[in-house]
Image (tube, rainbow, N blue to C red; front, top):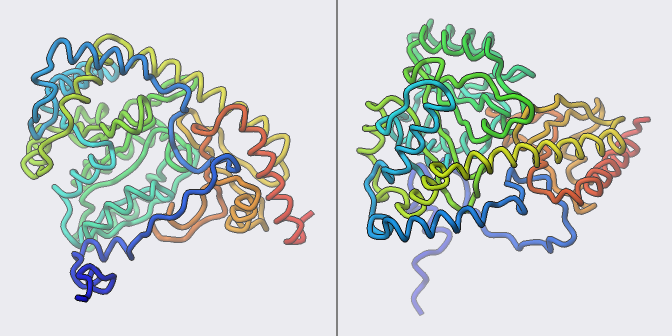
Length: 410
């Protein structure tokens, strides 16, 4: 019998340089029994709130009204009705002029970030990134051969004073950053929101050092008491800010729909490189209908209340079961709490102890551009059922107490 062609050794020989950068082969793991787990790991929407009725109503409207256009191939820029709906909505929400020419539709924000990187990055280019940060975006940037420079965060977002030092040091070497990547609103994983003063300073630095800001705005609409400051896109009138956005957090992750919002000249170049025949014309029109009939705005308003109540329940449980061991800054929106552990507690040990009790939390160097983890845990409160929150936090508190006792802490 002939030897199989696709052996692991042959795969290692023939994969691209990009695939080697991304790391070794990943095998699918067995799925644990979910009845025994309470997961605070994934930044996923609340399941009972998924807008099935609204999606069904919009789908019927689209199929009745424009079946031919919805069920054919679309163009590389994405469905025109969705581009127009996004442009109208964000012109209304941010008070700056957005047209269809500022928008290209993607299969979620991860795809949108990938399209920007593919268009702009060459091996050896420099990208300034917040640290901690979303691992998927850093993986994408790294996969195009770029060098990432880590910029720390505090409660007001990216430390633009540190960014200024790094940009000045590059300029002194005759180099510059290709762009600055950040998540200004309800940051993943840290939960912080960049202040207006920091946004203005960031924009000033982008102008001074001949670069731009790639802002990932997956969570910006999910604020609790008041909206965040204007986007970099809005503050720069679409010149030095390029936004990537998603419907995954506001409608459903399974739609795989997002967009890039930027200057028309850049959007045109992104489209010229596209090879996937564009995003789904059907789903794009369904989402456009939800925008135009007001269902999306009404749904987002409901979500704000749901996630605010979940956060309040998490905070009450943390005060009850974890107060001796953690501190945090309350997020103004989004899906995440960034817990700082008491000195002497090791975050990896706490994570493992929580896993043993059937509680999953995020931890590790994958959140950091320099690969060096701090003593934090990411707690995603969006997905876990409301009635399971207290039980999950109680188990987490037991894990912290166990690690503290083994570490000799009182």
